[in-house]
Length: 599
Ligand code: NDP
Image (cartoon, rainbow, N blue to C red; front, side, top):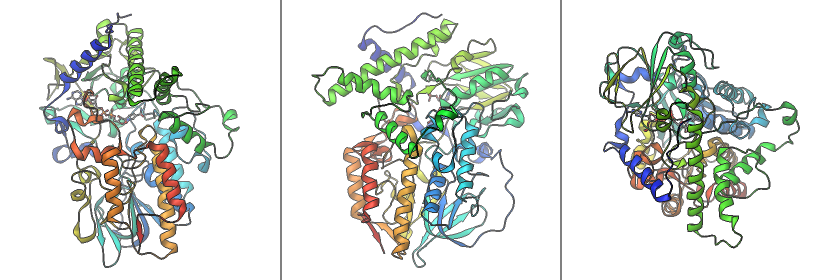
């Protein structure tokens, strides 16, 4: 067992955090990454589907949804439930599933409990097999939603939207695609996902590597052997495998690589915080006792506890609710305590210090080699980076064939034809895997892969150049009959993204039911409603991430201020998710739809 290196005072700890952050700050910030275009475009090829040829479409639908992930599926489901049948999902991948279609790396699993993460469990009659389900089951669930609600019938899969343009004379959207389609839709909704476009590290020489290379979101089982269910990757038995990155993705696939590879080299710039996973199977007998309406109750219970509220019971009991409850319990430990912003901050800092010390102690308990243990300890506040939960990741480094190559915050130096240079040492590799994440904070049109041209030729990329502008995160003035589905500028409940999407689907169904009832050809928010909403969020919005004191990463724009654009892109409803969902429920059920015009 390694010896611990814990600072003894808060000042020492903060100095350590600051020093570790400063080591990692770079002038090029988010620009350090390379877009997978041109000579890197093959990194985006779809390994899962041969898309059959078809004739270009020139037809019309009532509602087109761009993106076949959870956003499109739950919105499609709510529309079908509302009796709006003519819905078309347009999806780049060869099937629905979004992130769960693409990310089939070994060990892929969701950190949010399946009982709340998997939408529409009651409607589809599915019981999750485990508390935290694995990728293949989640992908199957996305297919189940599509089948249950007939969303495959009219879908265009393997079809990438290249442009979306409003035809003001016809009052229709024109959707152009890479299949030569020019479809028309009365209404368009889009859920193109916040972490959708893979990025590569801009390491000098990256193009020169002559071995086998791929990004984790396009796992090459033809090369590695094995399968998404975790079958042993026999193709790697005699290979020297490198993986760059130690974020949430790498944490899940490294144990599988360590089991399979001849030699594994994990190139680490910043260690993730790895808390206990504690997964278990779901008991069918217990599951059968749940009363109808249980999922809504669970969703609300999790959201309330996760955002610092009170509930009699913690139904989900996971790492997310633990973080918030530790803070809350500290604040209320002293019955005479004053509830001030300062008391919350102090409680947050005390809880975080305690949690991170536990996480570092866990490294010491698990890792045999003291030097490796030191390198695996995270020195930042837990929510500076995506917290990870795993019961096999750290243990992997006790294997003789698994080597942690820690770069002390500096990253890989260079890549050449035969391998990777780090800390002045060359590591010869047969295979190099990029666990380097996804674009965040880059231009909206670049991330979604197409631009949207509204009334009078206004492009959404131009309108949002200085940050997102919307009403409720969904409606954009100048873009009639368009609905954006994302957590931003709305509830912003990041710990359980599908919850945001299910609510958005319900809102869109209510609006479109009304629009069709009153025979409206156009639905648009007013300029005033949008301005007021944007002003509210800019002044008082709850922001996710962007803490400049944190170690750099995509949560804080790589440690560089992202200005107004960052504020607007990451802002949520000032009073938080619970209040937003209450507000939006009243808004959509009142029938007034204040701020929207139905023409
Ligand atoms: P991340 O962006 O979180 O991680 C990218 C990794 O690449 C980081 O460790 C980064 O280091 C490293 N890196 C980048 N450049 C270099 C370099 N030059 N040298 C060495 N290392 C480098 O991507 P992930 O795919 O891991 O995760 C993305 C998100 O997807 C997660 O945050 C989470 O939201 C979601 N996800 C959720 C999962 C779950 O529910 N369990 C599982 C997987 C993903 P550094 O930290 O220093 O920047």
